[in-house]
Image (tube, rainbow, N blue to C red; front, side, top):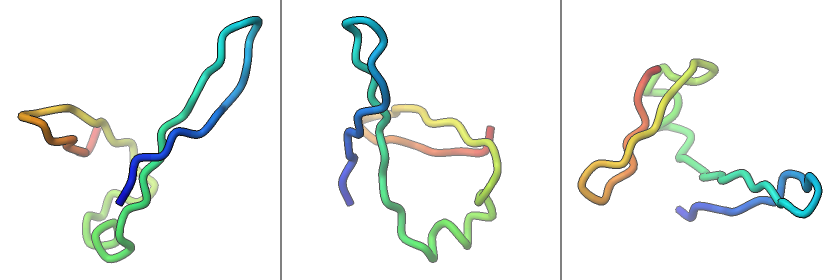
Length: 52
């Protein structure tokens, strides 16, 4: 998997980007988080996604 940097918009001289990651389908379905609000945190070099 890769974290992708996608250009979002430009306001004045400032460029804004969104970051995207493709997750395995089975992991997303088994998590029961599809369509729900989630939050991400960085912990010991790992990105952790959890229910918000």
